[in-house]
Image (cartoon, rainbow, N blue to C red; front, side):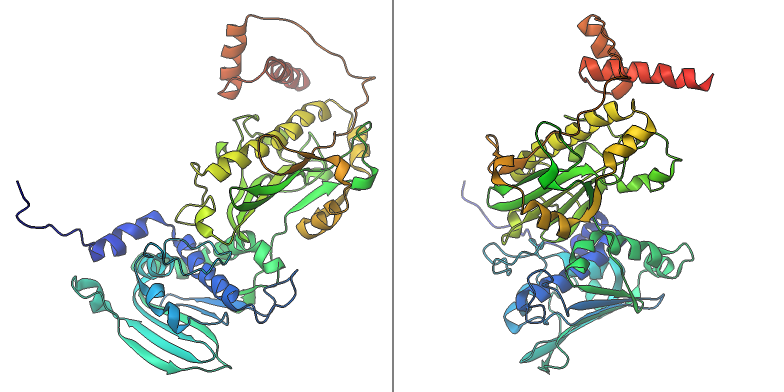
Length: 465
């Protein structure tokens, strides 16, 4: 039977205004606006000419109050050619608008979703050298279902006022309350920016919140001089990988970021356990920070995270001029676990992680003075210094990976003295080992790890006597 008519699949405003905003937290929505500032700087790159600090001269300023949220940048403005794309609720197929820039925006919903999350009145004003425009979203627009157009006013370009300002008023009540709450939303948000934009800030981008600059939280590792590490003796150094996987450049490092100590009260371990775990970076933006879950390999190919591993940290950096290839979710603050790129790289993450978790099982049996001696020849290096040092590693110490394109630096960790170490060997039925492993770790680990944990639990009880 031939069709007698058509039904419309036209989306409603409620879908975008009420439903889509539920999928993102308030601070992540604001970070989306900050992402747009960074993306704008990439279109020009006329200020930061230094390749090591490509964002020098670019900045974004955020202001919070009960009545208004405002974000202002000097990142090039929105050119006329992107006017329609910038305000579409979603990006059409074949119109990514990125021109192969290393951004994290794929779907074209970030700015609009953030505005809808915060309030019901907004003015966006943007200028480039040659042109500019102002867009107004007034409260009545949200209730007019058939009115999807927004009034635009052309502005003159101004080389002295290049950039974009978004001013949101009519803040939703929960948003206004959080912005003015003594519980400290702004302070907590400042901390999140220092973590999630640390790489960008270290590369020159400046972020000010209520006129105060945000300082980055650096990613660091403990390492000996690579030139002094031999396969025979080993040494304290990160496990490294770099390569190009399915069109995405990947850089990975995992290791100790502070000396190992079994006692959390010792001076050597006066640090936050939150510093352990994996940090995942996509195009200079952190999308996972210090993660200690199965998402980054903990508990799958490596033990479940527990305080014994609080000195271990890793970073994996994905870079691509095609953001759709990156393993990120639409919120830009999570990993797409079905990404083939991520699944391949995650195997390397698990391998590196297992190397150091296994080593801590040996370290904890050493006297404190011997552990300190192992780390005596190490220094703390940030990502910039780590890259400089690893560039000097002789190619004979890198191995080509057979499972994933790229190369791996996996030198042995130090050989430990065994004059005070004793081996305990015994056998038990496989089904009993599996049951005990499930009880201890909620997963099936090897017999050696199960036996070590059983002994360690018994020894902790002995020490309490």
